[in-house]
Image (cartoon, rainbow, N blue to C red; front, side, top):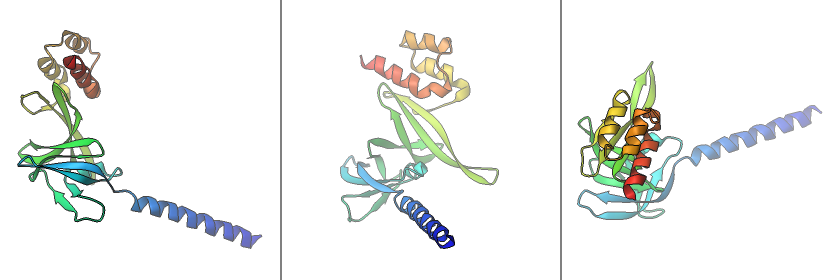
Amino acid sequence: MKLRTTSFLTVFVLVTVMTFNSKAFSQAKYFQGYVIMLNGDSLKGEVKKNPKREFDNFTKASFRKKDGSEIKNYTPAKIKEYSVDGITFVSRNVDGEQVFVKRISKGAVNLYEAQMETMQMNEIKVKSDYYMEKSGGEFVKVKSGKFKKQMTDVMSDNEEIVKALEEKKYDFDNIVEVVEAYNKKAAN
C-alpha cells in the first residue's frame, strides 16, 4: 500500500513539474506583425509577444522575418510603430523620453496606453497612463482629476457625449468606452 501511495505521489509531482515547466517555456511567442521604420519602410514578419509580461512590448520590438531568422530588437527611438498579433504600438515622446504606447482606439480621437515601471514599497509595479490625440492635434495625457474637462473640450462637437459627461455617465474608468463611442459617431 505504501509503495502505491509513493508511486502515485511521484507521478503527481512529475506531472505537476512538467506542466509548470512547459508553461514557463511557452510564455513568449512570435506572432504575425510588422515594423514601420523611421523612413516609412514597412517590414512584415513576426514580432515577439509575452502575454505574461505585457510591459516588455512597451520597451522594445523583437522582430524576425520568419521562424529561425535573425532577431532584431528595435527601440522606440529606432522605429515609428510596430504591430504584433493585431495590437499596434506607436513611438511617442512622453515626458522627454521616446516610448512605445499601445493604441487602444483609433479614429477621430486616438487613445493610447503607456506603461511605466515604478517602485512602490520596495516592489516594482507597472503603472498605466492614458494619452489621447485628436486628428492632427496634440498628444496629451488624460488626467483622472481633469477627465470631464479634457473629454468635453476634445469632444465638444458631439452634444450627446458632452451631455453624458455632464451627467457623469462617463468617468475616468470608462475612458475606452467614451472614446470608442465618440469615434463611432464621428465615423458616421
